Image (tube, rainbow, N blue to C red; front, side):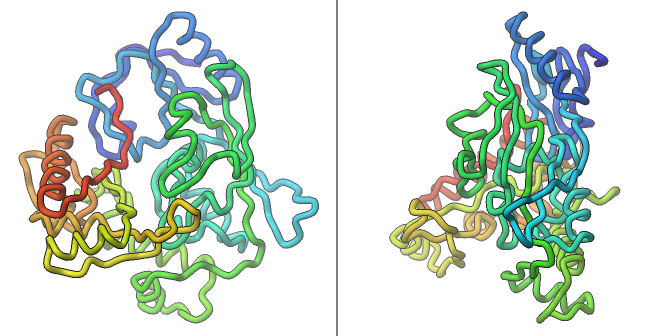
Length: 356
């Protein structure tokens, strides 16, 4: 492993923001991960695990500890005895997520086609329970392999043991910071039909010349990427709206009573979507955070110094050029306070905050 000191972290993030890491190392094997974790533990320094850098905001001061970048690669199709019609992929935690999605749809395996175009690495997907356009990775994760920093040992979790919910898992809640994901096993449906539940995705399919009634997995993934690009949510070189962390706020899951309160405060009926499966979501619906932000007076293209809101999607905060982490956080705070004051609902930030 190559150990570096005072390594700039901004180039490793989609925001392009962040100070240096006191120490920095890339792990290309599980043994590298164990050694780096032991090094940090012996010296009593903080440890932060860096994946694709797509869902985090690093402070201007950086991280006064060891940043471990996971670079475990590989996409292997495993045997799936007792699972007819299923395909189990074992994917390294440092593998590019988009590359895996493309491999899956080219193999005609369904389950992640609506998650195309999402930046980041495979290791981050179970942590955030990544989801979009009617799919979440929780529905296809068979097993997660990880290094337990507390026990200094490699462990495995079934999908059921990951405690998945909307943008939630044990890895970002009760066990935050305890595990380093090294591999994820995904169980996809060989020859399965794609998921098309959203109107804008259906329109993109038709606009692309696909048969909207019977699209292929490859066509659905391509349509998802077009929709994401139209919203500035696809990483495209030279696109100023791409210097972001994607959706900066979570879509709130609320009760029907809260929906009534929002409607009364805004004098408009808010759009709503199913909150998802699970007893905790019974009687609840999901309200778009973008709509709430707009009702609070913030629109696409809003500018606050060197920070701003994407010109194509209200949910994305962007680095307009040399913005600091403090400027992004100040804009996020202003939005949250305005939504709460106007509609009585406190938005929750989605990116991980590092070094604050």
